Image (cartoon, rainbow, N blue to C red; front, side, top):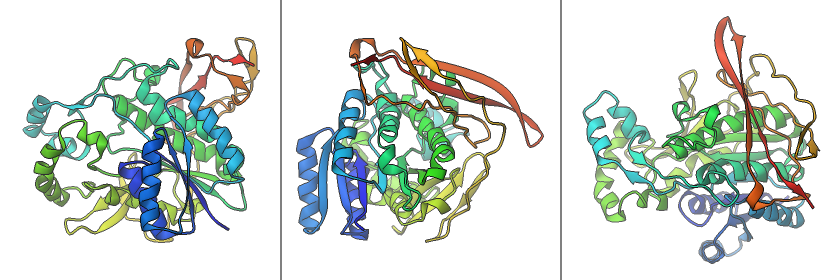
Length: 402
């Protein structure tokens, strides 16, 4: 049976390299390029076909930062395919990123120099903005548009006989310290990219807890520090080329300096080759490159400080969710429209993640009246004898019926 993989953000950087490497692994796979720029999508398809003439490549137009575009793309995908094997949630943005040289100099002579060099935390300034749907641009593009796409494509993804995989492109800069349940869209902060990527990490765990029994499995990966269009927006490509030898030497300290997109896609390819039911839903998979240029993948459990290098075909068993389940919410009503929300328990020690089970395919969004209603709840729980805080939140949206 021909496998089908959808890749968002496939026209450049990690996405383009991923498509190339997927075809190297399986030239018979059908790759659907999910992109917003059709000219770039056609150029990417032509480049791939020049290297793989027998490849099966299609294109669907989608802007994951716009809900209307996501809904239209989901309908088109459901008309084209009867099932999906892989959904690579790779598209992402960082709005107006700039490197703060003063922050770099301060960090260079401080105790946090290693963290700064390995995660770039605190080095960049960003100026997020509100999109036409009323959402913060980075949150909508990096997380929420992908989340809505998943929920719309559930019928194609959930199959016990042939499990499907969600593979999120996260980041080494995803930090809990930059994420707040009181400001999920990061309206008040200055680290919107980090916040959105941490949100994807949490969502992946919660999606596993909800969908694994239906044959859908989610993983998050980090491509490492890679030279892409996003990094070229921070400083000129010439400057990055001058820095390249220094960045290459930094692999002696941390192998996550993958530097080129082909290397950065290593963890995605490793996950592609695994049996998803054997993967640890709490692990994050990192693309790594040695000083000599050898690529490999490394899995980490940030909360437990565990680091291990996964081997082909061998993955940790599924972990058992810990802590009490949050209360299941009853039917809710927003603007006269009733829906049923379903609780999803996140196994990570520090949070519960509750996501609404939304059916929005039969509704038209009114761009002038979409206002996310964030309902946040905080409750303590006892886990393994220790008191900690658990968080749950849900997404509710105002929308108008046809």
